[in-house]
Image (cartoon, rainbow, N blue to C red; front, side, top):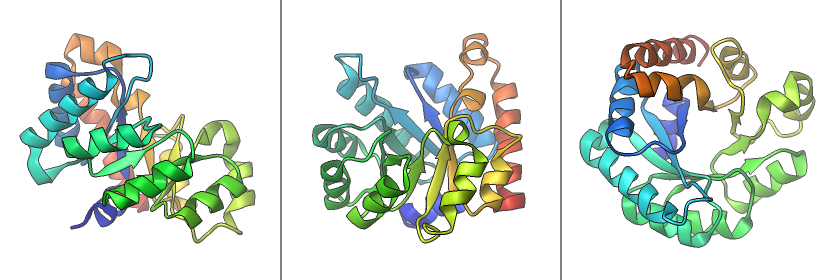
Length: 216
C-alpha cells in the first residue's frame, strides 16, 4: 500500500515531541499493540541538534518496525529539514504552517505532504500547491461551528484535524468527513512514559483505533 492510502486507511497520526531512544521505541511498540500505525517525529526547533536527533529517531523506528508502521517528520519548516527527514526514511512531511517551497520540495522528493492551515484561503492554496492532506490546526480552538461553516466550499480537500483531538471528539471529526487526526497528549503522555506505563498507552491507542474503525 502506498503512503497516501496507508494514511487514509489508518487515520491516526501520533505526534511525538522530544522523545528519543529507548522511550521512543517502547512508545512505538505500545501504540502498535493498540492499533496505531502512523507516528510523526517532530523537529524540536529550539534544539541545535534537531536534524540529527530527528533523523536518528526515524531511522531507528523504521529499522525496528519495517513496513508494518509508517513514520514521518513533523514541525518541518525548511527544505533542508525535508531532505534530512527523507534521507532518514520518512514517508510523509507535516508542518504547522503552509509554505509553498516546502510542499513543492516534499512532492519532488516523492513524499506525502501535510502542511498546517487555518483559513479557507490557506487550505485551498495548500491543496492547489500539491498537498496530499491539509492539517487543520488548531482544530479544537477553531471549533466545530467554524469547521462546519468552511467544509461546504472545501469538501474536495482531505483534512486532518490536529490540536486537542481526544477520545470524545475524534469520532465527530471523522463523521464530518475528516481523513484522520494528529494526536499528541493522550497518546504521548509524558507522565506515563516516565512511569513506563505502556499498558495504559496501549489501552488509549486501542480506544482511538476502535473509534477510527467505527466512524471511518
